[in-house]
Image 1 (tube, rainbow, N blue to C red):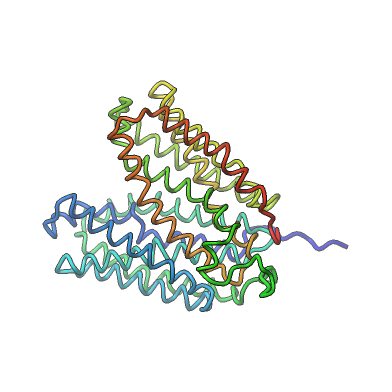
Image 2 (image 1 turned 180 degrees about the vertical axis):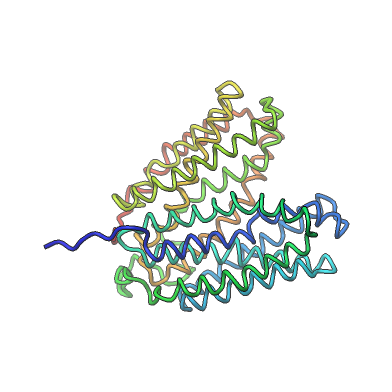
Length: 401
């Protein structure tokens, strides 16, 4: 008699959702709400604040190259407690900072703990401890991020109506300390060990890399990178240069704002569908084609009327970004097992930060040289059509759960 299939959200998915939600205190959308307060309070220009924030983000991203492996060496309870303590400390540092140097230290701490380690632990927990419903568990990370983006901006706007910005950051530190830590530690209690699919990673299996150096000469890892780094690179580049695109195509700002709503909606739907498809098929299978909406969206900028181009671009980017968030969490388990999942995904996270730093520079250079949008779009679509099938052709998951 066959064993009944489990239903409902796995425990790892509940942990992943809330960890991603609490990571919001270190995400760009939350910190950006205080940009004008930082400039006024520390007498910073927009360029100086951008450089300060960019440096903190880049250093924290590089630190993930080594710190991502903490998920392999510490229990999830200890790892999330330490990470949340760092996030609370960073929020308190920002709230207290009398000098710009301490503001930088606080930004580094919340970027490393929030955007870096908390999101990383959420994905690792979902991918490592959810077996039959791994795709849906990893999708909950995306929903945690989306919930934070929907809830915190209006909440902060309301709080800033009767509190100063430093008090709001003190409140964020207290929320992490007295709400997030007890809740996440409790949810992490049953999630112990290397995970139920750790048998995938046997020391004698030559396909499983056990050092960072081996990763960079490992065919499976490099082929996956050729696909999963594309979405964050392109999305970051286009979003940062949205002003230039709006000028070129005559987009009014309210329409651009509506485009972001469409992006979020398509991202949520795609994350849900991507989780279901991974559970039914595999993340390796999705690698072959999920960049296609992004390629079509970028090409639309050069061939469609301005209004249609905006909606097509935001819809295409959202569809690919939603699936990418799920695939980039689940594919490493399928290919390498769970034993060194923290290290592998930490290296990926670090490379993703570097790619998102390079993307806006490359696109800015192309726009300054008046490279036609249709040329940029044609290259993106050609890449989406040609490279992923080649990269995925020789990938075979060791286990689909």
